[in-house]
Length: 109
Image (tube, rainbow, N blue to C red; front, top):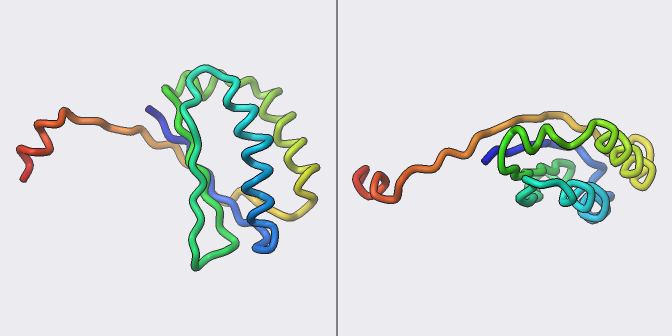
């Protein structure tokens, strides 16, 4: 499994709208593609301007199979709905989820 990690700065008064519209626009678009496993939205109660999206993909190949034209069109729609200068992507990351056999955890203690 691969994690797509995106950190945004969002106008605090628009944070809940950002989260709702993300689900309606981005999650709806990505869920049409094989390999999309789901998404979590993380918020820090002490930093109301920060929103982190954690998107799970079956593999890097599945993630990269979403056409650039779809990504661009989806972002354009999202930006129109949210309005100009209301959010900014400030960090991105990619992580691989490592899984170990259950017995190896027991042996570690």
